[in-house]
Length: 390
Image 1 (cartoon, rainbow, N blue to C red):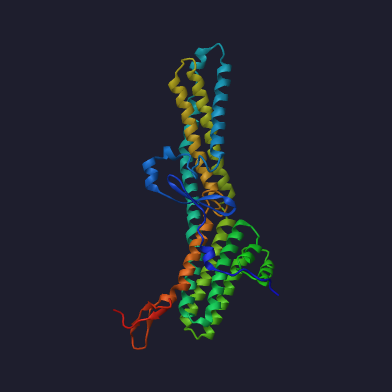
Image 2 (tube, rainbow, N blue to C red):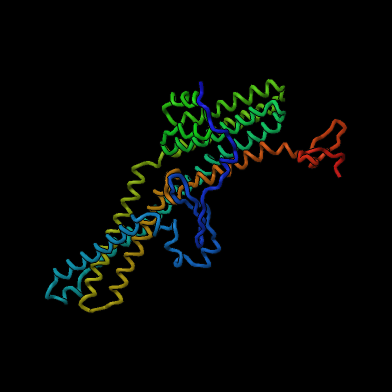
């Protein structure tokens, strides 16, 4: 016998997560207290300037210390090369001033000219995959749930189908929870019991599927079975049943796309080569700048010294920052600040489901003579129907 569950209410899933508004970004608190960017204001970003917002949550300066750490290491390498070069020419300032750096500069320039093109393509591919995960994968599941609820609310609007409509809402939200768990490789089926999305028996049945990606797909198979059976009993026209089946299949396709993108990464050899090119470019830049810095020591030219340090720091930082952004958005279902704000998405989907399922209460009715009767609020607070549409 199933254990008693808390009463399901779709409005509990509509609760917007805690939100913090910064200068240019709006950050929501996700699962585990992790902050994630929900949206940003491009106009304010331009007005404040990027320089004034470098320490805003979600920039390359704050989301990961890898970029700053790598930049610091390359500047340290610059100083080490400079010190070694100066010590190697101790007492011979003329030889140090005449140090031949042209071959090293030519090599560094050749690599620097090649890296931007391959790195730009790599970042473009990564951003395309990230956008596809949101639109053609996760978005497709959200759209399918909303469309299914709209069709069910329209075709199965009688009071006797109330349990069916509630069940579709439960299973729809359960599928999203299970989908996120699969993407995060997090097996927490008990959380669905607490939300009254599944019964004890259903949860135990789900545990039989060890591959987490199976579970949300099973839920959508249930939805298709339930709606098809209900429409058969209600003698609903076949096109409506076909529409629901199409939406269920689209949801399964969306979940399969998420699994495909997460488990089929860009070829490792390609990604390794891109990373290696950036690393080599950064090292060559630091060595070249260190030698030129040392060459300027006898002449005590502060302009060249400062230029070499800034050039190395800026170029290394930009390339490393692009790599950092790329690996951060490779899997947008994690807890990084740039990952999808799933809690906010779930609240939005729940609000759409609630709207679709509740729209029938205020929907005008059409009589057999073609007259449209619009609802009116009666004295007892219930909707009534008036006569002709004005």
